[in-house]
Image 1 (cartoon, one colour):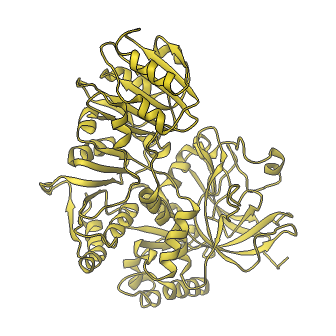
Image 2 (tube, rainbow, N blue to C red):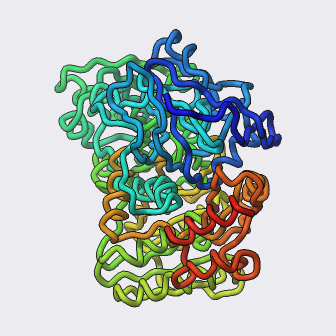
Image 3 (cartoon, rainbow, N blue to C red):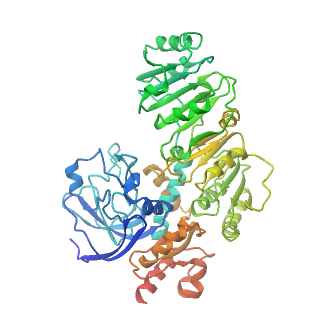
Length: 567
């Protein structure tokens, strides 16, 4: 075991809204199956502020319910569910400095990127995660256990090896870039869920066509039907389709009989907004609701939980006609951009919007038009200064508009990214959308956030609302490959740096949306406050001299660490 300090500096959330800079937190000694990582750099994320305010009520701060034995959890001192103080920070680069005798897949000296989303360890409202119910990277040393950081299906490591070339900041910023990547690359389910639970609700006077085609493509295990009109024209095709595929249904007479039941797919033939909103409460995680209007009109906006679209991968589809198959057939394969897209990014000049703009500008797609909307002129100017040369080199027609004062462009957009968790902006995105448009609800709307939306227009114009949360190992590897090949510089999104004493100011800047990019913390620098890159010439001229075209890099990072430590 190497000679390590016994105490360290750490940032801890000790309750709702309470941030503590602990200057004497114990450095853990790894047990037989444990790995100790020395943290190089940590990015501040808006999600950190959500944890700060929700604390023990955050769905990822809950107890782990499955996927690992309780006895194993008891042996992991960095497991901190509930009201136990939490160390946040999930955008992390680090180096393994110690391992237990029983560790088989990790070795001392490896530099690594941390995959933080433990989807195999469910909590009551979400899943476990590094920086939430397991301690994160806003400390000098963090402990992980090999029994929980290997993918149970593939055996892949959650500590992903990286080479020595990129700066610590560039590696740490891979995590948010991977979250962006997932929102484009993640595939959509275009059938009923195989082996899932299906609910079919048909209002009086309505009928459905093509249920048999849905069942042919994928067969559920359980079917429940509510036929409000009773036996008759609406019931006959449903009964015939179920019989043809060897399925029987549990028959209910009213939605109230469903209790707390959740379904993987809900097919609703009708146009009653109240019933649609009630049915939405019965959607399971990853569920699809298929609204079949049958030529009728809804009559009012429908309150759609946009938080569940983002966090729970709930999807809304349907048809203005009477085909249940049509809604599933129009679901796109993924959320990727296409040649010829007219792209709008709402909230483009914030840290995550910035990444979406850069990704679009450098996508290599043909005939792309890109409009970046924000309400902060200074941040827009910063974004334009970096994105314009990239867009020009790629032949992308780019514009940067203050949405408070600019006249909206006349053209409708075929791809819209929403980066700010404001329900009104979702309605604005729907209004801006061209027929067949994809609307990426990337902003982290809290579950339960309901946006009143013109569902009828969404179905008529075939607008696809989708969202993703977090990233997977494949997304991180995809972005890492671009970084190591020199095709992507994640530091392009870095706006400020700090040490541990600057974390509280960094969290406040992120929450107030005052940062024009990401803020990276260096835990080894204990007393350094937050410094924006444009402040470096006045405050740390030696570090400023290392910037290239105003961008952060490995040389600047090395100089900062040496300068701040010697100060």
